Length: 126
Image (tube, rainbow, N blue to C red; front, side, top):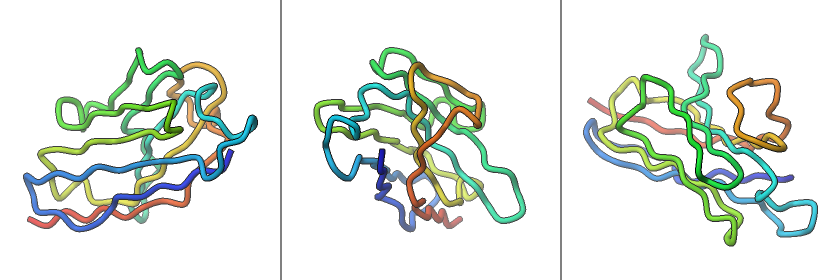
C-alpha cells in the first residue's frame, strides 16, 4: 500500500485544516478498505504520537485525549481516502502528521502499522 498525505499548512490558533491520505494507485493490493487507518504526529525530539484511528468500516474510531472533541477522522473507501478534520487548532498541534495503515481492525499499537505516508507539516500560529 502506497500512501500520500496532503493538506498540511499554516493555520492560526482556533482555525481548521483538513488532512487527506490517499492510496496512490487503486489496485487489488492497494485498497485501503482492508486496513485500519491512523493519523500520527511527531515533533522534533519527541516520539511519534497516535492522534486518531479508524476501523476499516469506519464505524469505530479512537482519539488521543489531546485532540478529542477537536479532531475527526473519517474515511471514504470508495475514494480510497482517509481524512483528518482538525478544528480549534492550538499551537501545540504543530507537528508533521503521518497517515498509516494497519491490516485488519483498528489498532492503537504503533508496531501494527506497516505502511506510512510521507508526512505533511501542520504549523499553528498563536
